[in-house]
Length: 254
Image 1 (cartoon, helix red, strand yellow):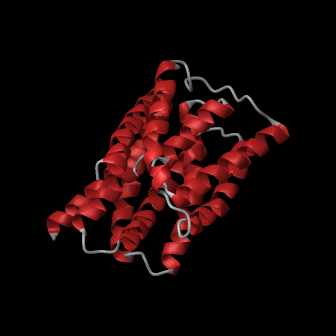
Image 2 (spheres, one colour):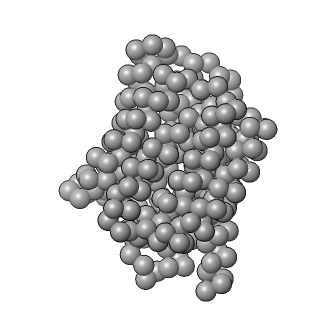
């Protein structure tokens, strides 16, 4: 039992560390929960994961928000849209099959990885390309799309957000990661409300994991702030590479 507890606490710490820089904390925390608690229902494990991770994501979002100048016309419309559409995505799971999306995900991630890797200067300088109504409308579309995706399916949400903020809004990787954390908090909160209401959260375990997740998140956000967009870009490419392997395995081999 102590070994399982140590594994979960370590996973929560590293999930917070990785997620604060390049997204993808769920790659560490969710498999740890499923492997150490195989008899627990998946919904309860996912709800516990959301409860633990929202504290780390929120801490990283706050640290970035205090230190990084963000475009309010981009971040806040995207955040509000993501919150509401995450509910719609969660509801859609009950009547839409996710098999096609599961099989498409690895190929989408490969395209994202190749595009980012080949575009050497992408996201290294902050040069916003939209303003006013255009910026708000595009932010609403991004938030709605990502929110729905997170509620319906979820893998790689943070990485997709970072890429979209870099590619379509001209953010550098540091600011894109900061913006992604704020939007992620909204998505996680929407899911957590549902999981909590339906009784699918192990509150005591989630709280212990949250402490470790926050600790890792503080370290990760400080590293990102200290080393800037260059480090965030490297972590982002690493996370997407791992996501490709895992999603391909889940879609075609499992």
